[in-house]
Amino acid sequence: MQIDPPTWHPEPRIPDYRAPAGAVDAHCHVFGPGDRFPYAPQRKYTPSDAPKEKLFALRRHLGLSRNVIVQASCHGRDNAALLDALRSDPENCRGIAVVDPEIEDAALTEMDAAGVRGVRLNFVRRLVDPDPLDISARLAARVAELGWHVVVYFEAADLEELSPFLRALPCDVVIDHMGRPDVAQGVESTEFAAFCDLMEDPRMWVKVGCPERLTKAGAPYDDVTPFARHLVTNFEDRVLWGTDWPHPNMKSHLPDDGLLVDRIPLIAPTEALCQKLLVTNPERLYFAR
Ligand code: 0GY
Image (cartoon, rainbow, N blue to C red; front, side, top):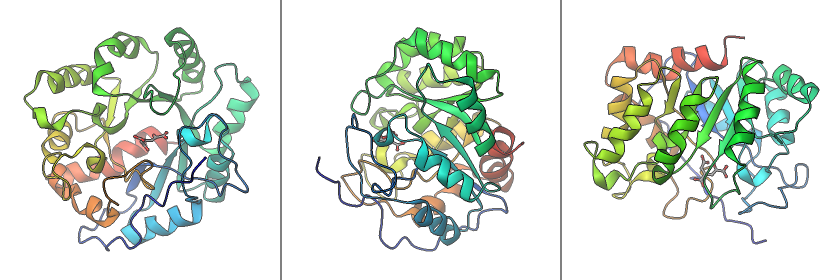
């Protein structure tokens, strides 16, 4: 399979915005290196290697303190690269794994000890062939017993079908990339209203990053900011932010992670909201133990 060229900016700027102490990048990935952590045979893309050292260097460059590393589809259900990254910086890293629904309890316990705090259910068909919902619900019930949560990635078109499933899960649910709204429809759209209605459920959380994927206008992503700001100001205790580095599958442009950080005070317009978004909320969900 052809290897994608690097999808990250080679020289992100140093942000003007200074994140508060303890700030968490709650959505990022590690890829490979492939000769040590091979990519999954069933993957839909082969990224350039983006190993943990690069992620940790970026964290320092951006003035952030901690990472939540999310298993990406190119590594399938083999979480070895993720676990290796978590174990190399246990104080500052937590993880979200993708697991076989039949995984043994002992393997889950081992992941918990390494800093995994949830499983990701990916419903984006260009990336994976999703498991049937009843199987995913059984897995969610198992990981809920560990105090874990579920991270879900889906497109806006799938919201209606998935809502009853998400509402019935026995744990917190973190939704990636604001549920991928069509930003051309605006924050007043019925589509985004349905998403906000789901967010009224007190177990729903949302990641308000990823403007680079959602924008139609391009950088600096002014067309996406109102969506993120709406979620931060209406659901201030259940919002998370992340870079999405190394930005898999980005083809339109290479997002500047320094710019992404500089957008934070626009989506969280007070210091108190920034503190919740970057520190208090992710701490509660990921770093309480
Ligand atoms: C993201 C988004 C994407 C990829 C994955 O697991 C993945 O491969 O999540 C995407 O292509 O939209 O969050 O990194």
